[in-house]
Length: 429
Ligand SMILES: Cc1cc2nc3c(=O)[nH]c(=O)nc-3n(C[C@H](O)[C@H](O)[C@H](O)COP(=O)(O)OP(=O)(O)OC[C@H]3O[C@@H](n4cnc5c(N)ncnc54)[C@H](O)[C@@H]3O)c2cc1C
Image (cartoon, rainbow, N blue to C red):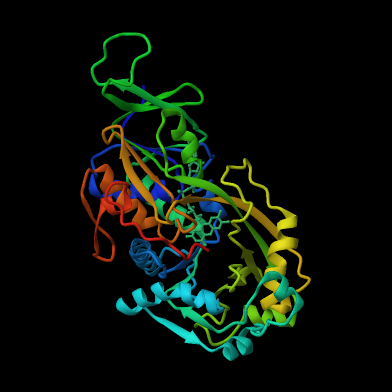
């Protein structure tokens, strides 16, 4: 029977960064990462828009993002090209969004983070943004308000998730971490600590441990120290059969790419005055639709986190919906960005957010700390990924605190269940 000290299920950003931090902290330990996909990052990590920002309303999310983005910056400066472009995030705000941004702005003020408030006229001039929409029929129908300003967050931008995945993967392989792909975990092996040899063990009254997992082909893998669940959107389905709640649920999310194929669209994509890249920032419109610049494709990736009528469920494989683009995304975008009226998508794909109840990751122990669950990345798992791995590794090492890449120390229980620092995240994009 294969045996390892730490068994990590899931080779997405969370599993990879957890393996990385475990190896740094416990170099002699054996670590095996298993994934049902044929290679690393084959789940939602590869579906990501991979935009990053050091800007949240929840204090812990802010710290996780700050630490991870600082780490990625140093990886990039160290010569591993993550294709990070510091284009910034532009929150185009109506009166309601401006209110929602206030906690993030006061955190940014307190920590000396760089942002700029822009007048509506500046957005109109640089991006061709329509700032006065009230009175338009479609604005009435959609309940849209005028733009009152923009908040340009500078510690933000976009990167390529496959470059980040390769960074961790290469590092882990060169540090003797093992991987098994095309290996779906079917379930957990639960054993009583004091077996009585009675059929049907373990019974609810027995002290039970997680010995390891069973794969689809019947292989059993034993974990000497910990079994770590980093299965993102699939987590509830893996934990449900053993009666453990993941406190997170999947919701489908879609991306449609739109080419900048007219002078007006190119003017927006290659907007001047926002950053040194000479590219538009990641734009978040007042109605929540976003436009992520992809200048290498001469396109924007567009998306929207729809809530109404979008069920919490896993779709396998998730398929992008043309109707969603036509009746939701396109009207939302073309209202504020008239240059994109009539645009049709050049390509599209879909994945899932793994949403926790408060928008913060959920990292906790079960079965007397044999099993560690790291879930609930809530749509920002790339940009918080390194720090999430660092906290998950600390929990696996049974530490009460963790020092992040920025030097900030957090209590691990703040991301857990018992000592959780509950603070609603309002900026899930
Ligand atoms: C459309 C879209 C846009 C996004 N945009 C952004 C963004 O701009 N910025 C950002 O930071 N984040 C973004 N995200 C979120 C981000 O992609 C996720 O938070 C992150 O990738 C989650 O990482 P993970 O490791 O938890 O999950 P995953 O990457 O999904 O990894 C989980 C892995 O577990 C494996 N697995 C599942 N079940 C089993 C099993 N039974 N046995 C073996 N293996 C299993 C899967 O194959 C998968 O590889 C976006 C997500 C989507 C879908």
